[in-house]
Image (cartoon, rainbow, N blue to C red; front, side):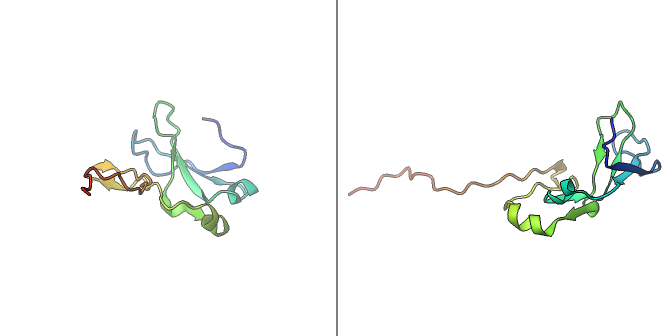
Length: 111
């Protein structure tokens, strides 16, 4: 996996990958640019699995999420995708927007 220009490796001794068990690389931005500030949020730090045979590339945790306050109110939708820690009945839960509408009534009113 190629490393982005604005990324630096802080340490090679991160927590083990959940999938393969290899130690992960700890990465973060060298500097916060306009690209990160234009987003609703960005991650100040993340983990990268260096094992090329592993399907896991990047591991992000909610505690490293940085919200851009000015962007949050303007672009936030009323639903949010859950973090990877959200589990429902032993499976990952995915929240989808609920479309509220009235179904046509099946009963016909007699006149």
